[in-house]
Image 1 (cartoon, rainbow, N blue to C red):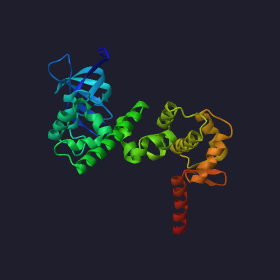
Image 2 (image 1 turned 135 degrees about the horizontal axis):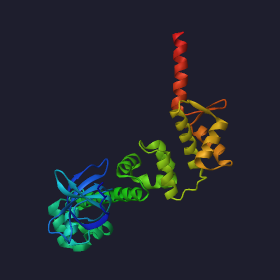
Image 3 (image 1 turned 180 degrees about the horizontal axis):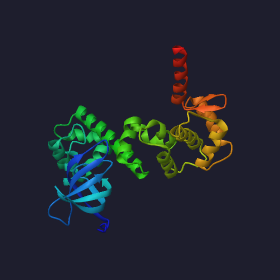
Image 4 (image 1 turned 90 degrees about the vertical axis):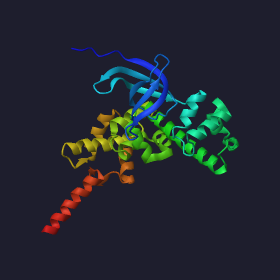
Length: 297
């Protein structure tokens, strides 16, 4: 039996992004390190990566049968470059609309290792660079802000255990408001984002310090309990049984569960008929079948 190789850490400058899937975050890049004359190939999932960035990766070496030795990264972390050459490659990589390789070279020649800080804090000074007028400068600043927002969202989500594919779906759904919405109620992810269930949302909630007896957690737990029952063939649950099952799942008790149930009914994410509680799509299916049978009769 072959032993698993020990995990190790490498770091360097991203020389080239060979392949990237923006939906999943799967990335193949060439990394230039101080220990090797030739760039090495790093493969893994990363929130965002651009040429010229400093990258730190944790993982193991693998031998690909076609492409040879590759570093298979379990975790990849990128930070903005600080050297003139790194900044020039970074800006010239296409990450910012309005900046190509030629303009990146001019900007770095003008501002040196302060270029990124100039874009961030004193963007009006960019107009002193040949080829940048007011319109181009505004375009660059707008694109810079947008790119920064995306990166901050991706890093925030990765920090709280969200994978690259899920992070991309969250950003597409919430846009620049992603961090604020998740901080307010991470449990909305279970209903808003395909592929994220209650357990993932609950892990994120715990990471953010959401109390276990939060009404958001209680409401999401009730919906999850109904979904589990539906998987077992039940279209509804009696309210008392539902609250008991949800209480055991969430390990909470007291008035918060009945309050969460009433909040869900008022919001329309739950439907009540007498003492029976439905998820809306199952209630619609039940009543739809009954109406269809009446029409047949």
